[in-house]
Length: 283
Image 1: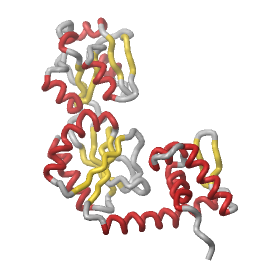
Image 2 (image 1 turned 90 degrees about the vertical axis):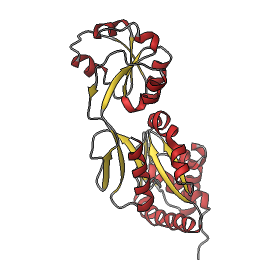
Image 3 (image 1 turned 120 degrees about the vertical axis):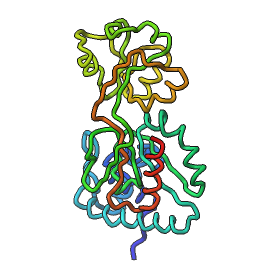
Image 4 (image 1 turned 135 degrees about the vertical axis):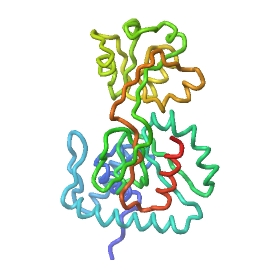
């Protein structure tokens, strides 16, 4: 029987094959991108097979890589299941966006741990979508339009209302929609300000500052840099504390709500149901 390749090399290849990207594999494994690439090159040399095609924007599995990855992934799943069975703690992995995590989920997590101290919760807060099959995610919260994919179920988490928010100082300067032209409008990746201005009947070119994450736009509004158009539940805490105010009563209803998403046949159905019910109870 041939000696097995090093486990680290197998893990590096398996993660890279799932992500088709050395950088994302490195983030998952907690090592450098160069270390993953080196492990994969060593594995290819040991097997005398090319496992990836190196492309300008990522990777593609070769035929040998596809044949090698499928049973290897099953083997790692068996190891993960064996560890889970021996562990006294139950772990559930929840995938969320960074903005949702910081503005809504994290402040509520103590309630979850108080109610279920025997459950270990891992929050995976990244923008990338969970694929559920290979990344270990059990349940996710995503903003967008349903459906989210074949074999997935989704349940709306809360309303689709977007509201303008700003610091109390700026709010005192805005008494009518036309006053928005005097201030910077803080946009996030959803870019809903043009639609909101159109619904208000305003024509013109506003001053806009754009951010890659909703939480950054909200933080900028809190510090007085302008007016953000935010999903109302994400700014509920700031509004309640007075750090943010709504300068206008107008609301934009847009089909970009948050949904609880999970596989139709989850690998941990009881835990997924528990987390889902808890999320819905907090909305």
